[in-house]
Image 1 (tube, rainbow, N blue to C red):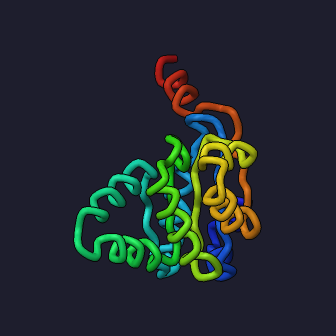
Image 2 (cartoon, rainbow, N blue to C red):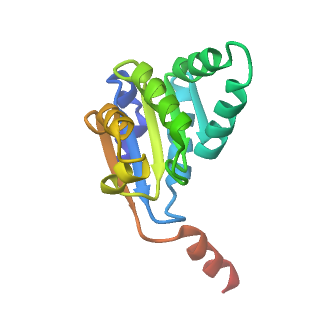
Length: 163
């Protein structure tokens, strides 16, 4: 499956990808690898951590036309990798931004989500309301789900170094 994702054909189909698994299970590595593969295929890609996306959104809200520029910027990437998806529960403003961003990207571009949380936990972490319903609707129906497992590769690598 990973080799298939590396061909970037999911981008041609405007599909999303979710890497879900335990801390240290290489979700971020896989997300970055897809972004790099996309760049090698001359696809405009961008990697950002969810806390940084939220911070950029807060800064954009304080500038004239900042929210429009923010949404245009992140909509323009053919592949957007969002790492640490739902690490913290988003506030109302962030949920509104996510809905608008994902609506603009829906059937137009691909988004990769790297998360520790299973799909069944997303709705609650998104606030369990109408925004959560709408955000989930724009993600779950056109997505390739990849379970990265329960092994912490950082721990495994550290064990190899100390031997």
